[in-house]
Image (cartoon, rainbow, N blue to C red; front, side, top):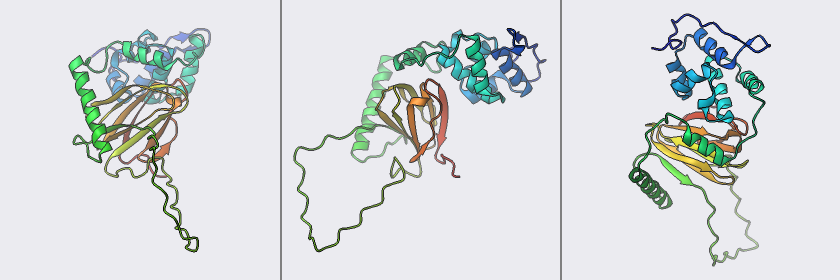
Length: 281
């Protein structure tokens, strides 16, 4: 096991950063991890930030993060895992690297995620991509026709149906007969979600965002850009793991309930939802 990866290893000497007398961002994260008796592997598992990137950040090498936006997101995520103030560390990172960067376009986020070294999964071959497209098409067809997905998870694109050319005539009503009471509007943006599944709906309303979604088995349900004004719905029997490249631009509904935005515009956020989310109270 590498040095600094074991909670029993001697505490590293923490250098000061500049004239402020503070330890650097990477050394502060490393010191907090050692104090928390966590290994690099444990931090990586809990945050989904890969082990080589955790090592690089603790050495104050942010070149492997894929850009300032991803670096800031990783710093905030790692800080939470080891018990530090993520916002304070991000401000220190901005001071040491020329200030907070402007939010990149969705295309930049998408390309940065694509070129990040040591990908989490093997590259798909052309045949595998074609198979996934076929599966997604079949799922959409079965949803449209009221069928159930045998694998237990679904990906549905929300779109407004075109108004038919010839609408049926409204039945004439008797003026003397009282009108039927109108149904109360639903409190949920996603009505009638199944209670035995976890359902997450995403809607981009503040710009484009790169997103990915995996089911409980680690199968990739979707990876790509959710454009401004578009929405997608993901369903699984047990659990959904999500990554949002521009968290502040996306609204979320979990199991029929709208939840708070995961972060600010430009922030990268990772989150997991199950059938019991959001928690009551």
